[in-house]
Amino acid sequence: MPHDTTIPSARAVEHDETSTPGAEWWRSAVIYQIYPRSFADASGDGIGDLAGITERLPALADLGVDAVWLSPFFRSPQRDAGYDVSDYCDVDPIFGTLDDFDALRDRAHELGLRVIVDLVPNHCSSEHPWFQQALAAGPGSAERDRFMFREGKGENGELPPNNWQSVFGGNAWTRITEADGTPGPWYLHIFDSSQPDFNWKNPWVWEQFRQILRFWLDRGVDGFRVDVAHGLMKKEGLPDIVEKAEAGGLADAISSPDDVPYWAQPEVHEVYRDWHQVLAEYSGDRVLCAEAWVEPLEKAALWVRPDEMHQAFNFSYLGTPWEAERLRSVIDESIAAFTGVGAPSTWVLSNHDVVRHPSRYGLSTYGAAPASGIGPKTEDKPDDELGLRRGRAATALMLSLPGRAYLYQGEELGLPEVIELDDHVREDPTFHRTNGEVYGRDGCRVPIPWESAAPAFGFNTSGDSWLPQPPLFAHYARDVQQGVPGSTLELYRAALRLRAEHDLGMGSVQWVEGFDADVVALRNGSITVIANVGAAPVELPAGDIVLASGALDGRTLPVDTTVWMLVG
Ligand code: ISL
Image (tube, rainbow, N blue to C red):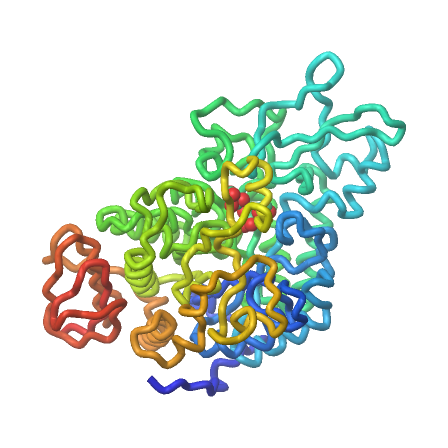
């Protein structure tokens, strides 16, 4: 297939447009997540940067996505890869400068790509001046009230205020020492001890975040992905968690608010109603997307009521195994839950917090918490070939669905999780806080390959890489897939082109009858989608095949393969 690098000017973003209700761009967009540390490194220091992203943006326009979401690039000590922010309104020097951001934004808009940035409102870095001021100001001060300081239990306050656990493992409280050397109160950190939680009952915190939103809106961003959007408010009195079989990690993170007093408290929605008003002051359809790990789907849909956010990640879809009945159910439930509140559903299979989906689908015990990671000592290792076949079939199914889809950098290359990382190179706080028991997320964060024969596979020209890239990345590099029929890259390009041509993002799902129960068959507008999730080949109906996730056997659809067809 010839490679078309020209970008039609019609795709350029018009920023003074007035939106047509019901037809806003975000309803049907495909959004590509860039993890700045690992996308492209112009400086050659081994960590990706904004200038590197700008250089490589044409590849994303060529892929056919509508927007990019950038994980945090703000000033940060990088204790949680940038999700520990020490200045919300500046770029960390490892990623560049505000001028570099402006150049990135301009180039993206020229190419017709919207730009979404990541806002981290649940916590900041312990090195943020606000937290340092809180430590210095002492007990009872206004500065301390911006965070969650509490006296400890026990005779001398030597025990944490309650039994809450960090998502990354271990206690969610850390005790401070006052300036005079005496042991002080404890502060809450739902994540790492370097990430103190804000006190969202304090109006001062609300005002700071309004200003941060305006800073980036004034700078021309098209929206925000909101980190831990279910976590900002904590239940009054900070009661103990009623012990459950599994504490911490994903199982805990998606539990109901009745069980976890720091997730999904009803007052959190007031914050997003406030932000909705801030965004409404700006033209150009700016959006808020919630990272809210809540189940069931009807609860996640609360984040996207008409006066709140515009989108919420569909983590129920991400967590669904490759089983026909479960896929049909989650699709039905997603559409029902989100359309019930007037928002289109979203779809996602991979991000920077979970094992890459081709590797998940290659596990014999799929269903294990996708955030726990896979490493050298994990017993159940993925079957790469099976995983990639299923991963491609799953993507073809996902991209046929109406609504908004999220892609994570490298999935268009079919990248697997990197398993063989030595302990000493792992950076995820999860790994360190669990003494290596949970491998965590480094395996999906390895810098991506662009050119098979270049240093660091084209990530930079120096050959350095903050996490080592495995030799097998040479087979997945973009340049060996570009223009090669049947490659994963060409599958993604074709799916995105057809999705746009047939306006699938604005369509609807009708289930198609007449296949075995382990076949997922649906119609969205003019396209019929057939995914063979079972164990036996399936005879295809008459019609033109316009997309196939894998090789076909004549008119027979092999297992773990999805086709798009124009039928009758
Ligand atoms: O990855 C997880 C567990 O190891 C998830 O529970 C994840 O921490 C949770 O979804 C919140 O994620 C977001 O906030 C974290 C950050 O580490 C993640 O990268 C981010 O996506 C803290 O800011």
